[in-house]
Length: 297
Image (cartoon, rainbow, N blue to C red; front, side, top):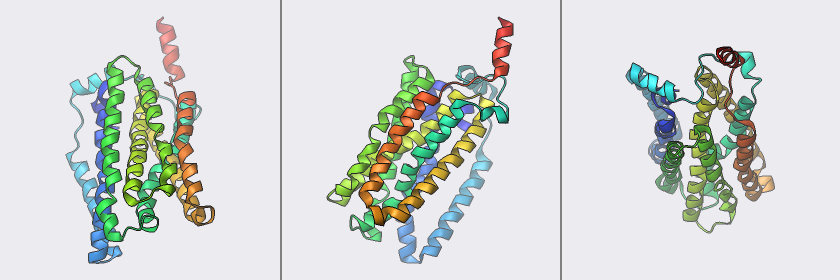
């Protein structure tokens, strides 16, 4: 929400990606930090230390944030695509096609990213033969590449906006393009070494994080600003639900059906999300706003 208030549409995706990338720094720091703490002390210490760091960051964020000056706030409002004076009521929000589109997108696309977060370290140990210390040395690489790549794809979508594309269409074009790389995960079981596995997962992680960053911007450009926080919260819940179910499925069945079939399932999730994005997500206008416009005409 902060970037949607501080930045106009032509800069919004880049600004949002930079801010959200900060939250992904944990995925970069965690592998070496957890490996060092676990080897130096024990795994309980790793949990306690990293949890305490997270709480400190929350407090610092609360202390340093300031609302934007009136001039910046007005510029962001003037250039927003979907910023009507009225908003959907809670029950009416659930009747919009775009809300269900966003929920389905998060439900099917988030699991791939969470697989990278939770299963990649173990996969590198079991399938690529890395030790815990080696995972700590190299396991952060896909997440750093993903952060940098997702910032780049977000900047590209902003560039499309500056070239004259409607903001929502620009996001759809970018997300469709990066989704073409997500199916590369299907190669993972056949790769000869850890280096090639890390390379493929780095590319897949760029696609995952590009979607995770930019779907939030899509929400801001499809819904009234007063509904954005609600939609983001609901969508986050659906994304987490999809991730929990998928990762439970992976844990239960990878040994039974084989890693190959798990990666086949992962390969189709982002293409499915593209279909949902183009067919279900559009700018939503509350009936009150439409009525006001008709009266003014």
